[in-house]
Every structure is written in C-alpha cells, then in structure tokens.
Image 1 (cartoon, helix red, strand yellow):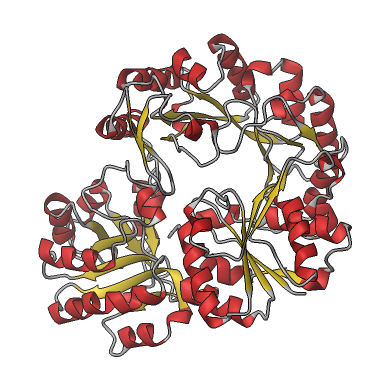
Image 2 (cartoon, one colour):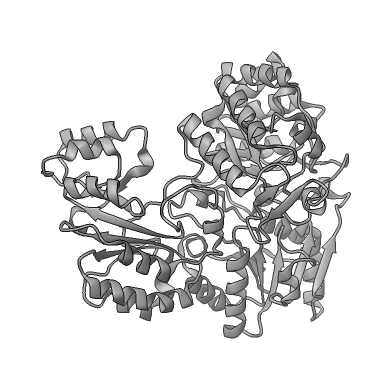
Amino acid sequence: MRILFIRLPAPDPSRQALREAVPLAAARAAALAESRGLLDRGDWSFLDRNVTDYGGDAAVVAAAAASGARAVLFELEPHNLDRSAWIAKRLRTRSPRVLLAAHGPEARRDMPIFRASTFDAVLEGEPEESFCSFLTDLAAGSARPHYLSEPSREFGAWPDPYLAGTLAVEPDRPVFIETVRGCPPPCLDAPGSGGSLRFRPEDQAARIVRLASKNGAPELRFQDKALSLRPDLPKFFREAAGANDAGVPIELELDPGILTEELGGLMADAAVETVRTGPWSTNPAALAALGTAWNREEFERGCGILTSLGIRVRPSLLLGLPFDDYDAVIDSFDFLGMAGLGQDALVSPLSVLPGTRIRDRAEDLGIKEYLRRPPYYVMETEWIDEDGIADAAAAFEESFDVALAPPVAPAFEETIRGFLSFADLRKPGSLDRLLVNPETLGNSLTLLLSGDDEEGIQRLARAARDLRKENPFGLYQIVLYSDKRIPGEAVQRKIADAFIEPDHWYELSRIYSLDPQRSFQARVFFATRKPSLALAALREAQDLETIFVLDAEPARGWERVFDALPFLAFDRDSVPFGLLYDAMNAYRAYPDLLIEARAEVW
C-alpha cells in the first residue's frame, strides 16, 4: 500500500508563504496510523517539496502520476481548493486506477467539491481518525465516499509528528506545536468547541522545543487558540525556557489581559518573540456578536508588559464584523495608534468560512453578502458596504504607512529548484519552449518582452490560452522593456486580458487592495533604463508597474527616480558601491521594491 500526501502552498510570487506550507495534518495522521500498525514508514510519503513549492500545475500532476501511489490524499484549504481539485481531475485521466481522497478544512460533505465527485473519498473532521478508518477500508479492498470523525477522547495519547519522526525539523520552516485542541470564542476559522478542550501530555511541548532547539529550527510556532486557558501557564513557560537551549524564537497566540509581570518574564526567558492576539474590534457590540468581549484596560496593560520585555505584539482587526460601520472601524484603528500597535497590526476582511458559527448565522448577524468561494470575504453587511470596507482598508494603510499585502514583483532567475521561473521572450524560440514543455514551468513565471515589438506582444497574447491550459493556476508577471516609449493602454490591456483569471484565489485575496491595475495574478510591468521614461510612466501610466533598471553609469536624472520610488532592478556585481549605497539608502524603508537581476538580462 503506497500513500502519497499533497499539500499545495498559498500562491505567492515572493515565495514567502512557502515557510508556512508544512504538511502538519498529514504528518499527524501518518503518525497515528503508524502507532496503530496500519501503516509502515515505507508505505507513504509527501510529494517532493520542490514540486509542491515551486512546480506549476502540470509539474504536480506529472510527479504525482510518476509516484506509483495507490492513493493520493490532497489537503484542501481555502488557498489551494480549486487548484487541488483541478490537479486531481487531471491525475484521474493520467492514472485512472489511483484512488483520490481529500482531507482538510475544505473537505466537507456539504461543499460543492463533494457533490462534484472529484474525489473518491472525503475525510471530514479530525484527519487522524478519519485517515485510520480510510486505511482499514483500503486494506480490505474498498473505500467509502465519506468519513466523518468526531473529536476523540484519546487525543492526549496520540503521537506528535516531530517526536514520532513523520515530520522533520527543517532549517527554513517553523516547527509547529499543538498543546491543546479546541476553539473557544471567537472561533472564526473552525467549528466551535464550546468549553471542550483536549490537552496533550504536559511534558510533550518541552520535548518538541528541545528537539527543535537541538536541530536548528528557525522558529517555534504554537498553534493553540486556547493557550490562554491553560491553568499551568507559568510552569508551561518555565519548562519551555529550560528546553530552548538555542533560544529559538517563539510565536504564539495569547490574551494579553491574563498577563502578570512574572508570566511575561517567563515568556521572555522561553524566547517568546511574537504574541498574536485580538481584539478583532474595539466595538463591544461587534465582539458580543462573535460571542466574546474584551477589557480595554487589561489589554493595554498586558501589551505594555510584553513590549517592555521586547516581545512584539501583533493585534488583529477584522473588517466587516456585525455592528461595525466605517466609523467603528476607524475607532479601532485609532485605538491601535494610541497604543503604539498600529504598524504591527494584522488587518483583513472577515472570512465567512464553511462550518463556522459565523457562516451558520450569517443572515441573523446582518451579513448580507460574502464571497461564496475562497477566501470567503465579507462584501456587505447591514452596517458597511463593499466600498466602505475598501475605504477602511485604504485608511489603515495611509494611517500607519503600511501595505496590507506586499507588492507583486517579478523575478529574473531562470530556474528555481529545477522549474522555469523566468523566460526572455525576445530570444528566438523561447515562447515555443514554454508551450512544448509545460511540466517544466514553475507556479510563478516572469516573462520579459520588448515593449516595442508589437508582433511579439500579439504572439504572447495568442499563446496565453495554451500556456494557461496546462497551468491554469499560475501567477504571471509580464515585463515590457523599452528605452523608447511607454507601452500604450491597449497593449497592456491585451496582455492582461489574455492571462487574467478573475476567480483565482490570489486575485480574490486582494479584492480590497486599491490599485489602478486590474490584476495581481497577472501583473504587467514597464521596465526602462531611461530616468525620464521611468518618471513619465509613474505620472502617466499608473495602470502599469514601473521598473527602473539601474546601470553602472545611469543617465542624468536617476536621483529623481530614486525619490519617486518605482521598482528598482539592479545587479550588485556591476553597480559601483557608492551608487549601490545611495540606492539602498533611498529604499531602506521599501525593501519589497528592490529587484536583483543580472545586468545581461536587459
């Protein structure tokens, strides 16, 4: 019996999201199955990380088909739901005898994915028990279409995947630790657990911390939403401090209102670096609708203890909550500003996720409209409409000089982990190579064209359909280079229209980002060495992203370009040190606008 697990990461051209893409649920399920003798270590595997993290859709299909697996299990999450379903359908045509199964928060019997019969089996609920039942049936020669597992009382005896060896400590990914399972109010991203909390063994967290510390983990991430409800927090952090010999930074979720000076000191000793918390809103009526409340004075006091110890506090605010109108949202922003927490805040629209209390009671809570597909953002409530939510998001960015989402930037490295990530379409035959070899393409692709070559632009627009046919969920950054003129609006629109996928998760996840350009999933750039053209593009072509290419001897006017802050492309090996120093100094607060590219690219 060979089992293959696939968890696809969130689309991200910067690839920063890859560090979060740990197949934790699958590893927990495999650990429990091994402990019960249902699975041997050689009977299962994760799809190669290079393929899941960097490969395009066709690459994932090809690798899964070549694995020889009897069953392939996809972990379905909002960010990968549609892509996973498309890959599963393609895999069925290539390997019709493979059994396709799904688990994860989007694997639910009441979801369209179940009714569409994309998967042979859907494992709903806690994946550990569902997976064990699935394996038992698979060994008997058949599998049911639906498995449902309720919260198990045996949870405390289940093995941890890191300690069991089903998940390795990696040098570029956090180690995730779960000490208590349950979702107390406000439970916004999972079914509520009421007062039912299930705890891992008391010493388990310290053993994982010691393992991570010994093996060079970059970060420890406690997943617990109910950590604040532990009755033994001082002992808990004291043991974590004793196990964390290397001082691996810890991030966790905690209510600052419970903090004392002693507890804060123990957290600092344990190397807690970041605390995520609410309040989600400062409006008591909005919080009551979520089934929770907060004490402003205790919150501020606890945050003060943490910041005095050098611990970063990351408060969360949600846009589109019941009873929150525009003014109430601005009041919440003002509170964060006065508390000195605004720039570290995590602000996003409320997601009305399947299976949650918010989803079940949406109409009663005054939620009039929300996206029916991931990311399920609120679009309108009785108190605020779509424009109001967008205005609130813009007000937050302006008030605290931050961006809710980082800018989309192209990449000019030809291959990343074996997959094509950049192609210079000015070279003969380069476009044909992309079309002939779709399985070699990465999940994010930068295409460089001459902005003066109208036929080349037409050719790419015609080829877009074939490119997207085999890699429909890819991200595209299209760079038009010219030192003669700024591409016209018709050119930009032709390219964008050919590649845009309006229902792409990455597109919808930025629906409230105010931007003159229509798409984030298919982004169009204008690049030039000429300072005058770069400045003109910034003034006159705001529906294009402008890239100024920094030469070793730039033309007159480059200083004014630095002041305007377009994207800056440079080759650190060819730009003189003094000029490079000036560039880094000008962009020190905007590192996301810096693009490294070899001089010969242009």
